[in-house]
Image (cartoon, rainbow, N blue to C red; front, side):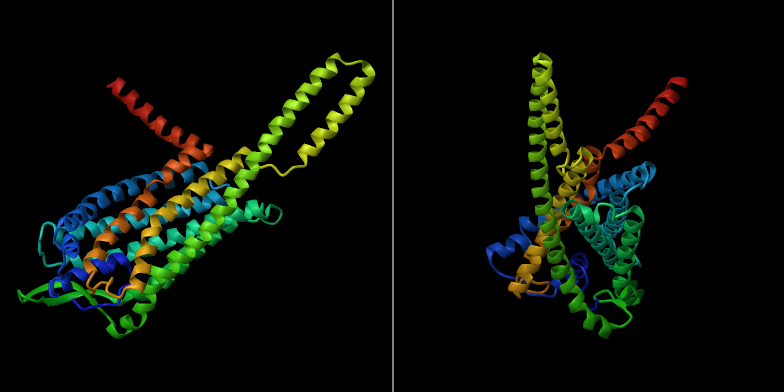
Length: 397
């Protein structure tokens, strides 16, 4: 297959293997560990067992998220954003899982049907990377949305309505698909002669190899460096801001509790005080209550939303950090590339990166269920109702 400037880390890994057989094996115990030793076995375990299992989990949990969020109603901007995020995470796992199965046919079972499943998995991987980029941008939007609401509440408290958030989510989807469209349309499947066997197979090729080489470097740089670093920087700033706001809110609530206790003590004194003193105490107690009421204290619902967004941002940072580290090493060391001396190390680290990404798209349901009472009530209503119906049917039969 023709050498390409590739768009995604997954597609990079898929096409490199055809070329590695023609490259001289690097010497050294450390490189041998990754090229043909235990490191390769670990990578195969992660890539063909752990990742598919987590992808199935991600497909299941995000189907549940989409169902519950739609049933609960999209009454605010965060619900719309979470629905868009669940949709992109679902598509990411679906495309990557299909690509992983096709790749397993070629790599694990060593089957060689007329349709080159290895080449087809490369195309599916590009679609999967596209939807993961949508998830990255939607996570950034969720962080910015909630950070703006708590940092500048007078301006943004009612700015991110459900309608505006829906327009933003749709715009992100359209922008990312438009960005990837040229690369997706360059792909095609056609008959070709397989080297070594001289057998005709149906596999991947480019419509315009010159155009692909011209734009491939920029796209690879954008996906490996620009998008992960910029998105992580924005999300970290938002997390720090929201963390300070949570601490301030906690301090305000402690003051509220202490003020309430003091007011209760004053009321106890009023009941035993003379009539003249009782009037004076009521006045001072009223002024103290008014002063406290003017404080900007977050409601319990707002605090739960902030905590949930903070945790989602933390999951996002954990899931994308391996990609930023790999990108930094690739810039610093030219041999840490697809055809460099450390290509086997790169392949191994990409397996860990992909597993972290998949996990980050599969565990959001735990955050929604724990912090979103509306989501939790809807979830319980749907699944408890189904369980009760199934139990009733069993009793009838």
